[in-house]
Every structure is written in structure tokens, then in C-alpha cells.
Length: 305
Image (cartoon, rainbow, N blue to C red):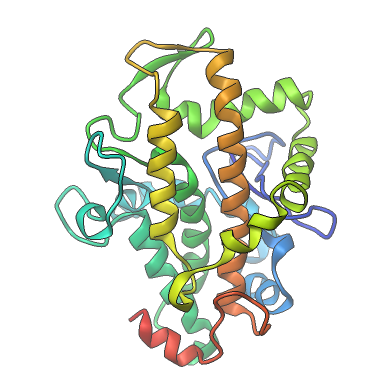
């Protein structure tokens, strides 16, 4: 799935719609995020500077980079998800953010903190020791992953990856239902396979029904730049309340499941896009009105290191 397109007419940009292998204009991949249309000028300029020329200033076109690079950067695989204890339906950073070898901080929440920290060095680029282009691409992708409820799922079933189900007549796994099937079915059934119309509908909710909530989505406590532990806690709650609920091995998921879960997916898509933009604005921007932005970049940089 995908969040995000870009341009002055695209609103938030919450759906990424290009298959990066073929260029085909369709929903593709996982909960990938691009929110360029919500960026302030300073953040937009920084993103443009960091993107490679072949991206043509389209962050969404590279939001799946982090998935493809797993085959080269094997160490990055653990950074896409969080395994939580079965049936507790809660997330705790110190308990859960670790890889299969027990190394702490190696989960999607830890990755968001790490790449946010790296990007904060952009303002003092001469002192940066990081590949900030890669940091931007990792952060953008992981902000999408953490909003997909089953990327913060139960350890025993690997976030629904080992639960075989049928999506109507098609055999799949529960994780894939939330990565792809729900959004693709919505696009086909409600928008006549027109992804731009689907983007417009999500944008209308952001500026309409959800307008009063958007500021709360953007805020972080203690003036932090981003709050991935909050996002992870939201996802495991949604996984328990909606993704896992009523599903067992071999379940056939049809209209009842699809129609009741679609609002949750749309909400998480919107939240992911809004929060990515807010995070990038806080990292790169200089507008005093940006929630969570601290003027002393050196101080923030030290806070994360």
C-alpha cells in the first residue's frame, strides 16, 4: 500500500502509487509514506536536496527503497517491525524493542529514533558522519511501517505472517491482508480502481472529519521531534482490536471483515502521512508554529546522541 503523492494539488499526499520495479500506476507494497505536500519550505528544500536526481523530487517514488535494500543491508530487516508478547496487547520500548538476538533498540521504533537523530545533523552538515539520503529514505518507510497495525504484532505469528487466511477466494496471510488487500479492495470497489480518487477521499477526511484531530496527531510530549513509541502503542492496540479479532488459521475474510476494518486502515494511512510531514518539518523547518520544533538544533542533536 502506500501513502503519498506530491504536488500542490495533492493535499497531504497519503498514497504512494508507483510500483518501483515497473513504474505501473497502482497501489503497491506496504504502508509506505510520502507527505511532501504538507512540508514547509525549509523541509521541502531539504528533502529535494537529499533525494537523488533520478527521483525527480518525488519522495514517494523511493519509499519502498528500504524494502529492497534488505537484501543488501541484511542488518536492516529487524528494523521494519516490533514483536510483542502474545495477547498482552501492549508495547513497551525496553521490553519489546530488540531483534531476535536480543540487541536493544533494533526495531521499527528504535529505527525511527535513530534516523531522526541522523537527519538532525543536516543543519550542521559539515559535522555529519551519516548518509543523510539513506536516513531520509529509511525514516520515511519506517514511519509507514509503524502505522501498519501488524508491524507491531505478536511474536508467535510474526505479526500475522504465519496465519493463513483467505481474502474472499484468494489464499494469503493475515499480514498481507493489512499490507495490501484491504486498500486494494477499497480502491477497486469504491473508487473504480482510480487511486487518485482514493487519495482525494483521505485528504477530505484530513481536512474535514479529522481536522480537529490532526494537531494532536502531530504533537509529541516533552518537545520531542517524533514519538514512535506512541505510534507503536496505537498499532498494537489496533492489531488486537481489529486485525487479530475473530481471525483464526484458515479464516475466510469477506465483507464483514473488510468493511469494519477499512476505517481503521484509512485512519492509520492518514496519521502516518501527517506525522511523517510533521517530523520532517520539525527536523528541517524553521517555522515557529511547527509543533515540537526546537530552535537550538545543536541541543536537539545532542539529545538524540
